[in-house]
Length: 421
Image (cartoon, rainbow, N blue to C red; front, side):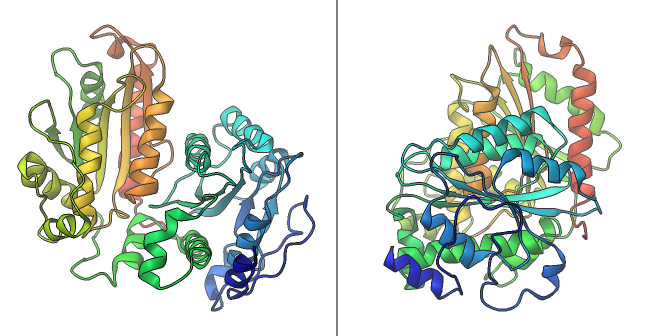
């Protein structure tokens, strides 16, 4: 751990104190330059502490290096829930950092209690914007735990900015490329990522404000203005698709909103999956807004993604996973991602399962599109229903109210793209 003390110490960290702190007792130190006006927004940290395992020493060092001095920290699900129930909602986004200590097993019993509480109180995190630091003594489990928590928090009203996860695996090999580019150690890259996430949460004023802040220094990238261009992607047959039928009901409710809707079908034979070009080959084509494999992805999808303010993915649940063509779409985004980030674009999903498993598909989208590809995740980003036979989805009890609420969420997100706290 000596390397970690050195990396964290460079950010002003102290050695870890006793475990089991209550709210406010473990106050972090400011990282780097003073935070100034963002100190007015107090960061709430939810660090569920397993009664048997406690909090890892490495995560404790990360928090001490990254947190501002006035952070509120809760180590139990019930204490955090009581705080969120009683807080004053002043508009804008209240920043929340979830800090997960997963040990070797990937199981944190207090995290399970937190997820249970979020599922029981679907408005508990209304008005919050969240990020996750997930630390494990294994090269497994850290991302899966973060996805599960993010999904539960999102259903409880929490938004997530693009790239909302900072992940610490046992080896930290996930920081190999970042450390190489920065000329730093893996430990320093981990600390730097945590500090960046905290700062983004504190400065978050809406997806367009975040995008302008993060992209303003990027070569060839112009910050976008607010708009209502919606890109809808699917790979279904219109005649039999419950997913497309539900989107039809949603689209009806978007009429008159000023939204400009573009639908693209990615059916079999129109889209080749990524075959893993060498980095410089992918970068070469990405800089030209294209891809080595060309086709509909380069000709139609890339330009549409660039123009979109929101992307709606219509996902039929295939064996508890995205369809092959939607998965190929995400994989092929990598070439465009070499040149463009998607912080300014909101992600929505409509998921239809024949029997069960809509949550698994939604979590897959969170991991791929938000935590990896930087799409903004609005509160309750996914409408999930279960319907098997063709035509049954549009006849489900309460489906008109659900599609109306989904349409309203899309428009409110596009209308309120630059909320000010």
